[in-house]
Amino acid sequence: MKFGVLALSFILILELAFGTFLVEKNNLKVTSPDSIKGVYECAIGNFGIPKYGGTLVGTVVYPMSNHKGCKSFSEFGVSFKSSPGSLPTFLLIDRGDCYFALKAWNAQQAGAAAILVSDNKLEPLITMDTPEEDTANADYLEKINIPSALISKSLGDSIKSAISDGNMVNMKLDWTESVPHPDERVEYELWTDSNDECGKKCDTQIEFLKNFKGAAQILEKGGYTQFTPHYISWYCPKAFMLSRQCKSQCINHGRYCAPDPEQDFTRGYDGKDVVVQNLRHACVFRVVNETGKAWKWWDYATDFSVRCPMKYNKYTSECADEVIKSLGIDLEKVYLCMGDTEGDVENPVLKAEQESQVGKGSRGDVTILPTLVVNNRQYRGKLEKGAVLKAICAGFQESTEPSICLTEDQNTNECLENNGGCWQDRAANITACLDTFRGRLCECPTVQGVKFVGDGYTHCKASGALRCGINNGGCWRETRGGYTYSACTDDHSSVCKCPPGFRGDGVKSCEDVDECKEKLACQCPECKCKNTWGSYECSCRKGLFYLRELDTCIGAFGAVKLGWSFVLILLLALTAATLSGYAIYKYRIRHYMDSEIRSIMAQYMPLDSQPNNTETHMDF
Picture (cartoon, rainbow, N blue to C red):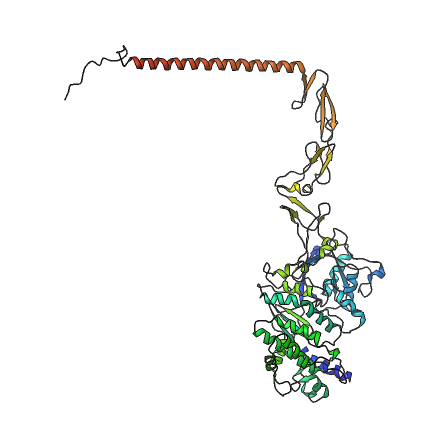
């Protein structure tokens, strides 16, 4: 009986397999060595957490043993955890002998930041998927957090050859274009299933619905996203239409089918029960979407999974109706949408769902459950709140992301591990590592208005005015005996220069210059030199006075005499100036008084200096 179920499931899936399955890819840029420098394509693994919207820079390592990564690297005493100040490690592993996901888990446990799997044959890139078997050994699947990529055999061979020649292979994994981000709204779909008895995948899916509901409703209510749930179904080939398997797994005379939940016709629920509940879920969305409250679908989907599970025999129409009524959704409209599930007729809703399964444009066929599609690109990676929200946030045009994308919850926390491989100044507690939802960035920071410049990975240096206020601008500084000297100056440069009296690089050290020993000062015959830290002291024999500007000793008496002569000359000059000023003053006063007297007297008597004015004017 179980064989029959499996056989039919295979046939149903095979009907869709002749469509197009697109491998989702991201870019890989090799930056060194020059022999393999260039941009290559790699396939994103369907596990772990791809850094959608971001990039990751690292150094490639090919292990000396355990080339296929099927065993724990701890057995070989090997660790790939990068040391402080160095780039993260990308572990290159060969394909074969074990599951892709197990290779990634072993690489992560050994400290690798990402895993590259080199194909073992020349073929187009494929998608690395998780194991189909639902075994206890698959517990590690949900713990994989590093990104993974499948690379071509030719690229893998080139990288291994470069490493064997002693070259360091550096590269950048780039997911910035893995999700299109044309505008400020994201359209995304979730291809899911109401079945809750399919093992770990069902458990993961239900857990995701519960955890992601809040974020999804915030995005939908704010108009930032347009969400649509979808449900996969298959049709039964005509040759099996009258078989027991087809009748128990399909509705509408074999048009819409789902595999038996327990893969056993003798117990539990049938595939057709799953199809009916999927149809109900799809119609609930259509009804709430028409009322402008599409986010209420998340309430229904999560409440149904909690209140109507298969294991408690509540996976029924009656239980679903109670959930619908409790949320205030119009039950009559839901049933009107569902239509006749028993008749030999097409169901418009399920027919539209089957047509949507076929890939169009840049999106391939949907064949895996669950599948998330963001801006018409299939999401690859763990179905987990943070990872999915990162992918959705990457779909917004840069600088238009809603605030939920910029919260600390969305930060990658890569800076907590080895400072993300970025530059940092532990003494000043300054780092170039910045966590964002697009991944960690190594960018020199701006601290208290002071801009640091550099590559962000190996060095950052304060620049501009006020730079000396932040860790002394990264320059040397030392205090001795109450005196402090610094190689930093508050100007617009970023240069560290030892002050006068010192020499050195200005960054790590400045050594005192011995002016006495090197005969740079205090060299007159009467001078006596003594070196001090950062300067020197020069003295003269008794009776002499040292002039630092002239680096010479002069007699103290001569100096005093010179001083009194200067004062005497100054006094004589002042006296002469005073007498001259007084004489000028007396002359001007006398001249003024003479002019006034002559003017007054001229009013009463003719003066010799006036012309004769005795004639009168008689002309008419």
